[in-house]
Structure formats: C-alpha cells, structure tokens
Image (cartoon, rainbow, N blue to C red; front, side, top):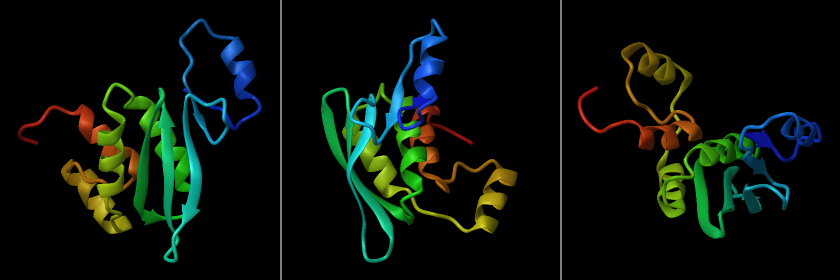
Length: 128
C-alpha cells in the first residue's frame, strides 16, 4: 500500500513486483476521499471512493489529519463491502489515552483509532 499523495510513491511502486494499492486524496488513488469536510466540532466527514463504489463516512474523532490513516485502513479492508467498512468507521468512538493503554494491557478490542474499526472486522468473532 502506498500513499498516492506522496510524490515518492510512484518510484516505490515501480521498484516492486508486488501488487500495489494506493490510497489518498489524489484522483489516481485506488482508495480515496472526496468532499472532505470538518463539522463545527472538528469531526471529519468525507465520501469514500473505492473500486467503483462510494460510501459516506462521518468520524466521531476530530481532525483532518485522520483521513490518511482511515484510507490506509480501508485499503486493507477492501475485501469487505464498502458500506460495511464506512459504517464501522463511522461507529468507531475515540477513547482517552488512558483507555487505550488499558485496552492494550487487557488485549481488549477497542476502537481507539479509525484503523482499529476496520481491523476488528478481520478478527474472528468469539471469546477474547
């Protein structure tokens, strides 16, 4: 996965035989965000576009800086329906730093970061 907004990514893509998937704001990105806006509380919203599909995402977390992490997470989750991924991201809640530390210590699956909302989709359901 390469950030299509990074000018160096094209050179990296040319140096590998691996399948390359790109994400970013660039119109050439495989996974991209368009119509990126912050609401009055500074929460990020955008239209997510990937593989000819589009879904609306409205994060409960603050800051436009989240968009790159969210798009990278979506690129990992492309095997899932885009609507389901967008909903998981929109439902994810921010946790305090202390709650994140406690969750890591107890190995709890907490959505402290947008990417974790998508990663939870990959884990088998069941105990622990």
